[in-house]
Amino acid sequence: MFLAKERATLEKFFPGLDEALLKISLMERENQDNSSSQANPTIKLFGQFGGPRLLIPAKYGGMQVTPFHAIQIQRALGSRSPSLAVAATMHHFTVAIIDEMTPDKSDFDLFEHVAKNNLFFSSGFAEGRAGVSIFDSHMQVKPISNGLIISGSKKPCTLSMSMDLMTASVILSTEDGPDEIALVVIPANSPGIERRPFWKSLALTGTESHEVILNEVYVAEEHIFKMGSPSKFDKVVARSFIWFELLACAAYLGVSSSLVERCFIANRGIPSERVALATELEGAMSALQGLAFSITDDDENRDDLVAQAIFVRHFVEGVIERVAMGATELLGGMAFVQSPEVTYLLASARALAFHGPSRLSAASGLDKYLFGEPLQIS
Image 1 (cartoon, rainbow, N blue to C red):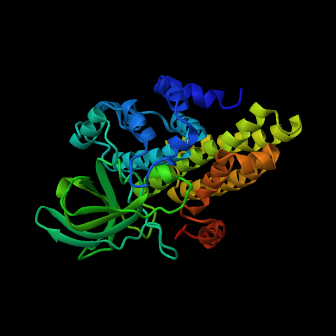
Image 2 (image 1 turned 60 degrees about the horizontal axis):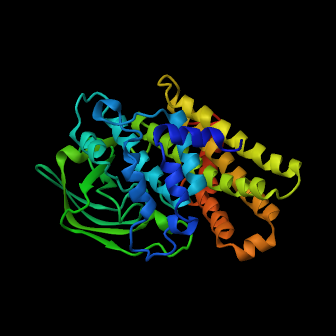
Image 3 (image 1 turned 30 degrees about the horizontal axis):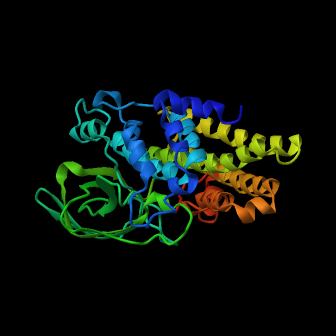
């Protein structure tokens, strides 16, 4: 049965969550019936079921789910609520980054606190600015003896309303070497943090992706995590990049899967048309599963792994584009006109294209990589 494996995995790790989501209408799950400045009820529900613990290592009280199972869960969530799946992507991605930077800690208060209380990390990592590196940051940073003082804004910042801990990327200058990129973690109730409405699109309103302004906010030294040079794919940067592509692609694949599922439920089109759509989706999911297994191989060349992740990402993006449009056509013009859900899912599925790196920005770097040069992605 279509989506059976993914939903079985979701039920295994979060018994009852799928049923609970179905009790809320799709547009309510997407926060369409509330002010954009209010929290999404499905995010709270996900927290109540222990969702924030998904990728946190077991030694800190987390579930330590494998990448293979994580993408199945993401696809299942995306098929129910695009906004929840995208918001979960940003939280899980942050967990994965921090875990990559703290692999040898036997005890880690931050993760233990998050796991015990099911807290959410917001994502203010990449900034939505055209023409700059996905690792760039324009936050103002002032080093002090026991940490940093940072100012600036992050927009969009996913989970801005429901966040317990905010994350942001900053660039740290060094006296005798290249600049370093760092991830900082800040309690969401810290003095100097302000939220402002930013997201005006009707699609993915429930991700709570608004602007967060920081006015001389203090960051403790123990909550500054250095990732390496932003100009090359060090181990942490590379693996974090791959984690994001895995989680985001699976989430959006779930959104397009929801449209195809509606074709099966309504018996729209002929068997060959429905199977053709499902075939594309399952092929894309298989590519993601291959990438999920590759992330566990530390012996692989990092440029090769990142290049593979980008190839898979853009393949999945193309599949989603074709399948979402194809499924919408099968569902018919009346479904498109009379149901806001079909229109909403079509728009939401397409949003993967707006996460960096775009096909256009990555093309030159991939072309040079295929000629044997080191990989450079902006």
